[in-house]
Length: 444
Ligand code: 5AD
Ligand code: SF4
Image 1 (cartoon, rainbow, N blue to C red):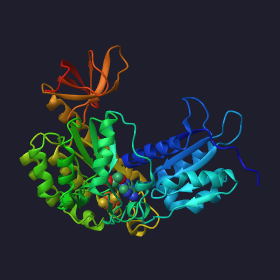
Image 2: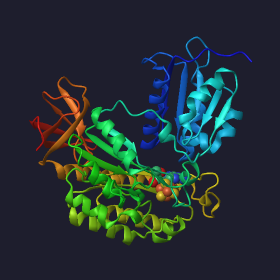
Image 3: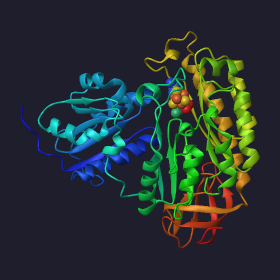
Image 4: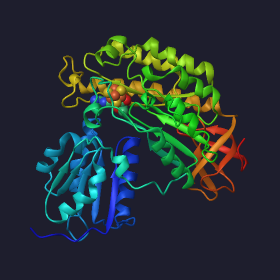
């Protein structure tokens, strides 16, 4: 079979969660280390990597329409690789349904992209969805670039097996990356300009490791060690599981101001029967107790969560319990979804699948409640003096956009630069952002 010329330019398109964003950055760095350059905005790329999400059906189906749209201006097809969780879950199907795809690579195998590209150039279609014991992280080039806010995967995979969720199948069993590797990667990110690092994991607060003295530590130990890096000013982590919110991690929110007052702690539903059917292994009450503990040490904590409406068998009364929980918590922001049956998960074959119109109606009511909660949270912060990490320029002249400690988007006008941590007064709240007045170019 004819060989194709080596790709010179690449584009990585990531969908779904923040871990995919992280993986996408690492794939881009790997391709750059092989001599490829990112395709300029508006130009065709020789190699396109679609880094996909399998969490809900809509996200998974998107990959096929995206592949169809990848023709180049001259009518030819770029070299296409499908990566991410759809690749892991539906590798063979992709190869059958989409002849234009030359490479399918799972989330634990993308360090092998260079070899796969060589194979594809030689005319062979290649699939690699292995979950090798030796980790991809060791094989990837060291980090050299970073914006002011960086992601760092510390934990991957999930052993919880919630009955609706594909993650344990697509990302595999829980693994924690070693402490020393994480400190090294964080140091490089900070040297490259990161002022904030968000530690990522499907169950990030289940991370465990041994610190430099050989002591077993949890996520709090890692966060507190990272907090010693002088130029690292903010630490966040996501996504946490309610059952893994240890007292030590909660205490770290009290003891270390670099740990930002924001907690993404999904509850999924407010009814204990539904939570049990979801195999969540917590109740609404035990979840609220965790929040109480966190609020006791960090009263200003901004809370976030994920919700699923229309889980099989969910009744109107059970859904009302979700609404009641939302009222009780006062979330700062949340994600909410209609239940989507995923192949191979226990819930997909449960009785009582909820009709689409009922799900639509519940999602609408839930989102109305969550929006009200978000607006109320934002309004309650008006009048506060706080720090903003400047992330990019705004649309207006002299305008800058950044994040408050509570992860709200804030904009202000003044002389600042990307990566600055400035002091502002929050003066007005919209639904999705706040306007702020610059007080000082330094921290509070
Ligand atoms: N259907 C709908 N939402 C889902 N999520 C996970 N699996 C499904 C599914 N099958 C949601 C959960 C999870 C978030 C990442 O996606 O709320 O916390
Ligand atoms: Fe999926 Fe549950 Fe694991 Fe979260 S905790 S990744 S929802 S199985």
